[in-house]
Length: 284
Ligand code: IPD
Image (cartoon, rainbow, N blue to C red; front, side, top):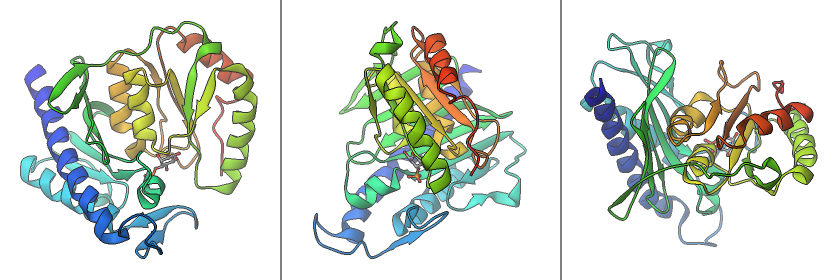
């Protein structure tokens, strides 16, 4: 029911905002003011270019603890600590899928685009979620059937995709995996796409890319190999703003494609992706 969905959305907004405020301050403690040197506490994950910081782990711990307080019967799946019980199932049927910092490279460098992403999933579907821009505090949220909204400086606005109809005029956001082999193929696809659209943006945080489609700041987003934490909230925000969305069926390891496109270009954009060979998964 509607009240349950909006309650889940409110929980997502609350915890994502708390985590975003926490890491905004923590970043300065960890890395100091701009230009102050070594990024001391940067560790690496899947490859040497895939960073993780103390802020990522602390943010995930904060979100996990708050969700346990607010929604004790639910399950949890986080980018940094994985699933509880290994399976992420719960009596309530709700699984929280969390990226404690999406856009960690931007976060480490002090570039603006990084976000906290929190989604509630039921039966393998996102039903509510929030994405909070860490630097600006902009809060994108959505609940299934209840629309997508942006809250900034106390103002709440409903989100709609751009009314664009010509894919040649589309501003397209994309991103690249940390795996060198997958990246090489992603580079080829960008080269094929670039002459056929208005332009390409590599913002650096997939959750925000998806919200940008919702907010009309870009017209489409596509990326291979995203993990569920990257897209779980943003894909719902995009869909609730009218975007046509395709999400991976798996974990991201097999390099499946995620797409969100404004409705007026969605079919043509899909054809374009097919023509350049981008619909296929890109294995590692
Ligand atoms: C990454 C960002 C990036 C995307 C990568 C993701 P992370 O997430 O969303 O934009 O291109 O594929 O892994 O590692 O910063 O949480």
